[in-house]
Image 1 (cartoon, helix red, strand yellow):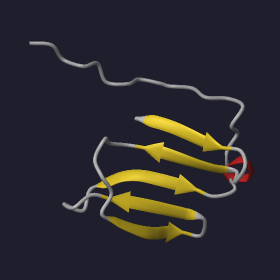
Image 2 (cartoon, helix red, strand yellow; image 1 turned 60 degrees about the vertical axis):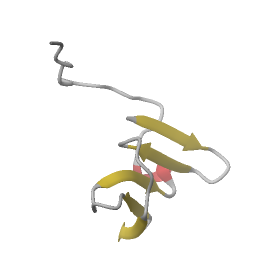
Image 3 (cartoon, one colour; image 1 turned 90 degrees about the horizontal axis):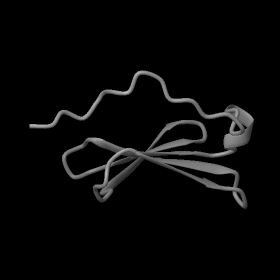
Image 4 (cartoon, one colour; image 1 turned 90 degrees about the vertical axis):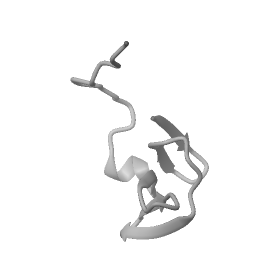
Length: 69
């Protein structure tokens, strides 16, 4: 997962999967979801991100560990 912040438009894009988007849908006002060909969510675009999220603080908690063989 990657987070991309664009200060010129105050938008935050959350890249959930490294797959191409084939469909885009507005999920809520100012929130757009990108979906792959199978209908899986691959990204989220949040307009006016600084108004809806504290972008000065980022915290990760309890991420799953990648299993090795």
